[in-house]
Length: 230
Length: 241
Image 1 (cartoon, rainbow over the protein chains, first blue to last red):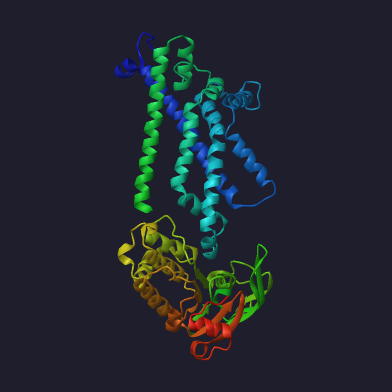
Image 2 (cartoon, rainbow over the protein chains, first blue to last red):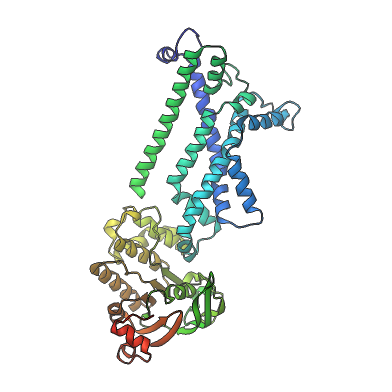
């Protein structure tokens, strides 16, 4: 990025580097949320609806992992993917794929824990009715995930906020390589350390705007679907 | 399925007690419910009517004694349905709520839409089919729940004070549909503490106080010759403690 320009000038001039960074940030964070949701929604629902030994411990662990330090997750994935690590042969370190894997792990506990709480609350309302209708275990999971969809959108957004805002994991496993693994947050960190504060601040404002737009869109979908289906 | 062709009637409670959290909700009661006109379970609030219906549905297991349906204690609940005092509407359209009930009852997918329409027509809600179920009034929600219960084509339909919070017009509407179901062969067991309703609907009456059955009689006998002072007091409108 031309360092003499402010972030707004970069936007106005349609700077290709800036748009590549924005695009990568969105692709990585949204992919991570999609993967974490794919696993976390059913996992949370199953945790809410089943009883097994060690369930309480698992719930406490998942709740606790909502606050996982991003650098620790980054470091763990780094060790797994590094050349001498168990998954080193895949050659994923310092690629966007590595960043998606690391952020999925970061977001998964958030989505699973919030889903578990939502579904458990919903079950206390629905339990008798579904039992009386003879709904089996898998049917309960599907029914409650669908009927909890409005609350679960918020859980997904919490996960997205976490992914979009963090810098530690993507820095460690992505390496902040220009044009390849540089995201909004790592660019901001870099520009700040270079003393290019207006550009860093401008990038920060763009990032916040993007997060707001995505949240507004999700809110709109929620209100629209709530009006249609109650 | 072989078992589905077997009858769930008579429904027999044999010296059944039910305790929850240290409180005895039902105390050694025995009861036989056979086919015929609606059985109304009557008694003051807290007398155990809801607990009794839950046991009859098989939602709770008795602490002591046994519940049996058609002589079997372990039947699938496919031939029974229950309507709770405050039914839960799924967060979907009215029609989708009925279709869900049909799907759970194993009704073939291809015929669900048509059957949903029939059921909604039966409870007078056809024009509301596409509306979100949770946006309906209390009376309309009760009718959706009734249609969803009827979707199971139950042999026994348990109703837990379904009209307690409804206005007279909605109550009349509900009672009419319930009586139609009774006429077409569904055994209705309904909790109520509204004596007017009991007079309108009951073939026979089960009178409960404090988790015990004090009387079981035909509706006429119950009102004209109550055999316990508690029943006489209840019919007079006195508080029964």
